[in-house]
Amino acid sequence: MTPTESIDNVDLDILRALQSDARLTVRQIAMRVHRSPTPVFERLRRLESQGYIRRYVTVLDADKLGQGFVVFCQVKLRHINRDIANDFMSRILAIPEVTECYNVSGACDYLLKIYAPSMSEYRDFLLNKLGAIESLGSVESTFVMSEVKHNYSIPI
Image (cartoon, rainbow, N blue to C red):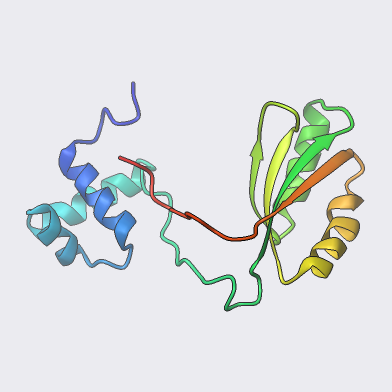
């Protein structure tokens, strides 16, 4: 079964509307998709229960909150097995500065996205939090100079 087998074009239109603005009311979504509110409400509940909608979030401005120093960090573990990978992932899940973590193929094992207030705060994070993970082999940090595109939408 493909991921979109149980949804139709109306469901996709609802998802597109929510991706553009998650604060839309059921009535506003219904107007956008040319349906009445009750069926749209039922479709929303079904999309939530089936996991198409995982959660609703608010996008904050990192610069205004003093967290505008963004780093992509490539992590290579010394060696890897199931226990080491599970330990690494559980440790990463507990670090709030790491906002995204991907297990990737290629030259590194994991790609992390980290928000910090400054370079010195990132250095402290690297030495005291990430560096405290015993299985850590190497880290390569890439510092974001400017953001060109940041889109939270999935092209559907």
